[in-house]
Length: 118
Image 1 (cartoon, helix red, strand yellow):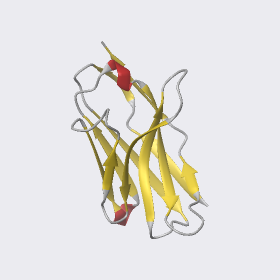
Image 2 (image 1 turned 90 degrees about the vertical axis):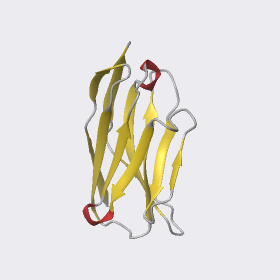
Image 3 (image 1 turned 30 degrees about the horizontal axis):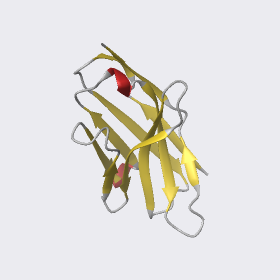
Image 4 (image 1 turned 60 degrees about the horizontal axis):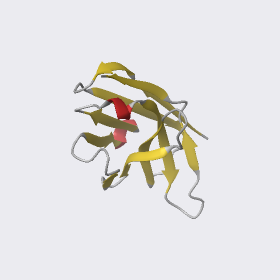
């Protein structure tokens, strides 16, 4: 089993910045993709950004140029630096880890609230 614990959410004014962190523990498969998803009230969960264990990244168009995802493989930690935050970024942000093997098994964190005031 894998456990994911997020931190760093909070309330910030529009234009501000926040950094989210997610620490993975347990039986972590060496090849994996870690990332962040978000879910706003009344909307479906959507991908924000992902990063492979080799450092390849992918971003949603809505956050490109504003958010940066990174990871520390030695500490099994993924980060999301969020700059120029907008009210529409308000959501619960979830950390995700997916094994890169025949199982593609996924794990989720409990979520952390990000609220951007206008």
